[in-house]
Length: 388
Ligand SMILES: Cc1cc2nc3c(=O)[nH]c(=O)nc-3n(C[C@H](O)[C@H](O)[C@H](O)COP(=O)(O)OP(=O)(O)OC[C@H]3O[C@@H](n4cnc5c(N)ncnc54)[C@H](O)[C@@H]3O)c2cc1C
Image (cartoon, rainbow, N blue to C red):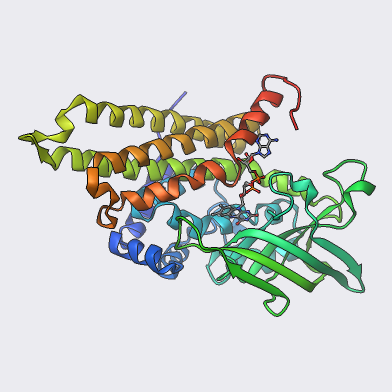
């Protein structure tokens, strides 16, 4: 066993931090307050060649593993941009994973290079208002027509829909009642976000405001056959392939967010003098921060272990889910504690920790909630009966 980062992994961390260092707190505060997509940051990361880190080299990527992507995204979120910075990038990284695994060579050639160089952005249209976490109950329907499909339906929470050029869209091609099993009869597309047929309405929300989330209304959208990913009816299976890498990346992002909040809280606790001594000299202030550190470290090693398993081609569902669960909790607890450590100033925008706090609760909700993770572990690891 060797727990050190390789030279290449350490270099990834350093180089990503260098790019992120060009964007200061004022930049991220402004993006958050204006609800403005961080195009300059996205462009700088694209220029540095980071967006295609896990894409195959022949399509403009770096061909590295999920472990390297996790190290990269941890560096991104711990450098001041928080979860907004991560979200500006990660939909383009794990979103097209189904394309990388199941797309044809022609599709990969058409779709991946523009994502890798930052010329195009993709959004992810899975969640629906009436289905929620019960994804097989989606009702957005793709009906066969000459040359392709006509699609009608609604999606909810589709992030980056305001700036995206493409959408990865999960649809039903056969009604659930007519399928052998609920997960059959669903078809995945990666296609143009044609705004003449798709209305993208922004949702006002608590945090991560630099990256928009939307209600999406799809009205008679034509999708050519060549934009279907894999076989008709197998879309849900393809989507499952991207779930573990997504969980691992989100986990690494949560830990980065927590680490930044913790560093700021510790710095404040060293400097703020009350009752004639630094507040961090009080055990009531320092112990909770020390506890946050232990939780973040434990979650980080679970995350790297899950990444390593995935990159070795070994099963990693339980580990990836556990990493997401532990890191989201650790990030939320740490960001909460960072606000409390700053006292009244924790509530002021100037100290940034309130921005991290608002972002951190999202990690417990999306892309998967804690309850569903625990149900997965209960069924798959502990062999308990399925509860839903
Ligand atoms: C800011 C933001 C960005 C997002 N971006 C995207 C995106 O880009 N693309 C996309 O497709 N989706 C996106 N989502 C959607 C996100 O993945 C879902 O919100 C999340 O999966 C939860 O689904 P839901 O909101 O429908 O909750 P619901 O399914 O309505 O669940 C509500 C609550 O009930 C609990 N619950 C439900 N069923 C059970 C059960 N059987 N047992 C125990 N508890 C249960 C849930 O855990 C949850 O706590 C985003 C969400 C947010 C908030």
